[in-house]
Length: 136
Image (cartoon, rainbow, N blue to C red; front, side, top):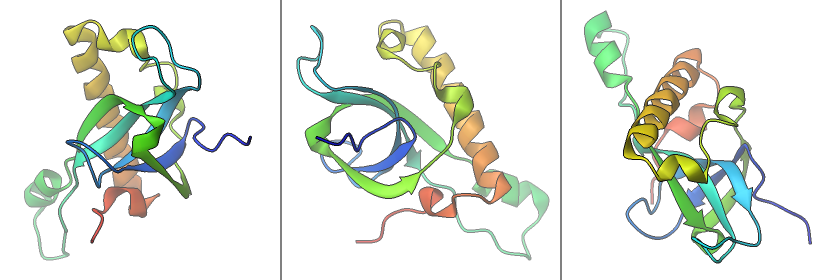
């Protein structure tokens, strides 16, 4: 069987609190482990997308509307729908793992790094599709 959910692949979350949100796979575990006895992936996604920006807005307003609120989560493969898109996040590869979730301070630090990375990616203008909410 061909592995579809590889690190860097963008997927849609279909169930739960983040249903309909886009996330990028950071790490995948095909056979599960003791804590999560099912195939799952560690993902980082966008909880709150940046708002629309127009040319007439000032720099302060643009900066405020360009903020991204991320989340990191361990999600069952059954609740992920892969897309054709991929996002290259070199600095996040080793940052978030399953051990990150054990300590709340580590989780917050990881979330801050993900936020910084996502905002840099958004400012660069690359992968605009990832930073727009799904319309359904």
